[in-house]
Image (cartoon, rainbow, N blue to C red; front, side):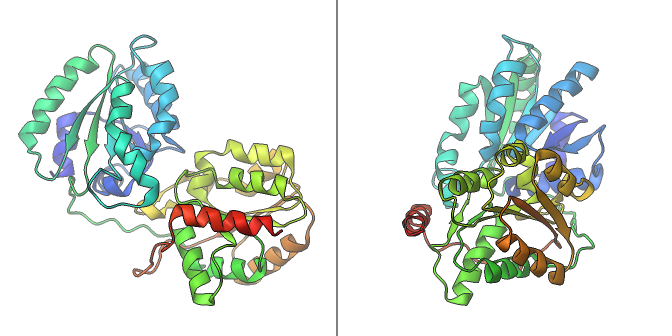
Length: 373
């Protein structure tokens, strides 16, 4: 169905969410219609953040907000749904729109398989009434579902539209870009050149895909890298766990701005522990590029200042390959926790592949390599 029709049927004037490729039609519609507007559309740091923001909107207006997200974000909403929205607590009505990655029977990436299996069950377990929208779902069926949903919402309960692949369409195009010149894949090539045989923990999305292909192009083993294909926002914590237990070995974390924002508390934990052997590289393009390019707030905040406030002994921002190479080499030789923020353009090559090894193979190869260090 056309996304404009879904928005009309829902009838809300406030949306908050974390972008998802399955919901690209909705995200592009919201960006074209509202842009980033605190009164109508806010892209939040994580799905729990969206849910709490939506609750505040309801408290202030009495209206029903909409929260959109990929199904992988369901874990982040469990606490606010159960202990804030639930009708046994504050009875705050919210309409969730959930992109269904990993739907059973539909080929998807490994991080989505189990999440796809439990997507509807998790929602139902949280007492969220659901309706699934597919390519064949008619506008009339959605209207009937929303009429039923309104009765549920009136009781202070929550509802969800679960969106199958390709179910929503939007004819308008949206181009996302920034003024940065460095391309992420080239940044990763520079990182790989300096890190040598040091272990790297890389974040979810295109960064890990580009790291995998860089190793292929270089004829190198993949054993050096842990590709965090899911669990967005947790790569730096994984790297911390490795660094603490391999104190004599330099460990690198290749992170993204959206991931850093999603669980920024991990920076405070890193700064408090100050692992001397960890280098945290944040590639910042100010966008959720892997799922379409919608903006993050990272383009307008001081990540270096955040890192220093969290206790990182050294933090710097670079905007050229000359400075990047200099800072990477200095970080490799420095015996203290370091952060390098790298300004990056939006975009990747069209033929970018995906890892050809399984997640389990990646884990086992990485662990075997760590045993040798």
